[in-house]
Image (tube, rainbow, N blue to C red):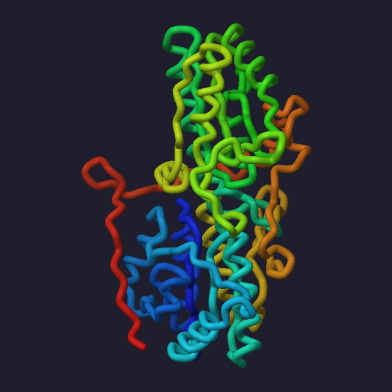
Length: 401
């Protein structure tokens, strides 16, 4: 029987390994030989694979509570064939050498483009290959799914952390301002999730979202009013915040490929404006990788559906249903996993809907909380050693080829 290859791509999430667990356990139960690429597409191109069929069952189970990407990942992309055919030939050679008939690519919208390209590769090189997409991204910007696995856990971490900070601010002298900068690339889902930091009836943090052009005067006025009224002001700013002319307010490194620029610094930029315009000193937290690595605050709902998405893709692949992504669709109080054509989601970017953004653009509507809260439910039980989570690194047998 041909092998099934699991491939991680892009940035890790708290529940990325839970999808891997779903793929590998399902394949092993069905008697399908399964392997994983070391370090994503870069490792696949180099023919560096792990033999997951030979791995200890206990290690596969441990994947379910490990943050990060246990097999390694990369942000390497597959350029169009016309632009660079050599990697396509290289991939075809590796897939033939290891007798791989199924590829399950776990990633975001760029990864779904790669999964779609693998279908083209199969046609170009006459390979009996089924390529499918397993969704994940804390940015929540994938189309075709109610949410992207990884987002609820990151949202839960951000809202919980900011809720704790707000209690800290209330304890101190008046006039305190705290800015939390979230990830999210070009969309504001994570920053919007910080609205949940305030319990019902209490003032929610101000939100600065990429979907709304920055109105600096309005922000300054809102900060002044909050400090005067409440004695403090909490602000969540998305890393992709833009000026009225479309430029990012802060950017670490540019890139010719859209989505591959390195953002960051919006929080520090805002703090400088508050200091210069209002004479207010603000504490800034660049949450960075913590929000995607915080397995200790992962959503049990997120983890369960990440597993289900991976498992479903195995069944579809073996049934000959390639060219699809596992989409999560609401069904009453739960979600069902349904196949979504890759061609309808690859490369697209799902922004925060206007219906979720309040009229003043500095808050979200009640509909946002109604949409997100069900995703955050439940906690993942972790084993602890000496008072800390048991996150010992796993090792994997190498697949000879």
